[in-house]
Image (cartoon, rainbow, N blue to C red; front, side):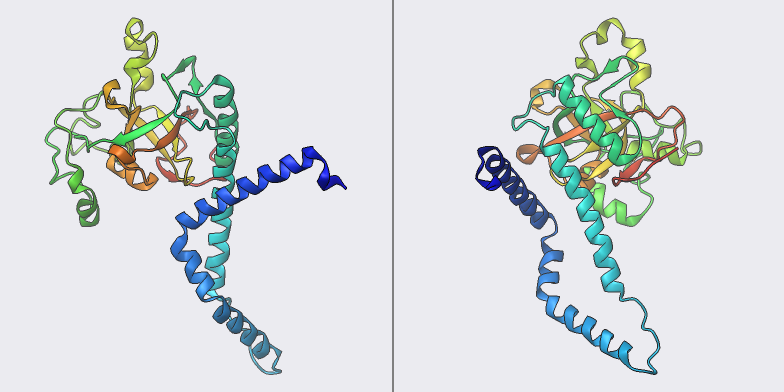
Length: 296
């Protein structure tokens, strides 16, 4: 029988282990929703059966679609797409934290480009960072214009309540202010500060001999950052330089970035993938993004 051949047995064991790992990740991320579905499956089935019986009557009008079932289908679709991304990345990323090889970067770039609908690359215009996979730590808010402070920084009370505790960095970002004044600040300026990364530009091998060239290239350069453990992704910009090598972290994220990616600082810091986005016409918006979106 085919199943008895060693090659197929090895593949079977490999895919079984992969499936188990994926189920564990999905259960951890969507535990509350899945428990609700399990606990209410009988009621959902009865409700659906009742609807069928009602529709069988001669004079009963068509019932509207069940909103719960619509939401469930959309949720299932999102989970499937995210699960596929997590699975694809897990087959390439190393088990130990280290810089990716060029071959690994190319494979991941192909996955991300295909899933998100735009070109993603570890090297752009013959320039690259010191790494594209690393441990992320928390950064503070940055002053967007002269006089910006914690009382002027937030647009809503909800944002203030959620992100006030992160505080504001005592110094400016690598490119100083995002806008010349509060009156001149645009929505793009706001989003650049809100969704920024601090990356180790100073560790690029030939940075010191090409400071001006690299400075202009890295300034607000768009990147795609992905948490490979939950599939959450964002379009962000390089807004600052850091962190220092001695911290043990390879990059930093704004409070909003850390919150969305579900990443923590300190002992619980975790890995992320961060690749350049090739967007010469500036058509890709900043912020959270899900797979299978394309921009032209």
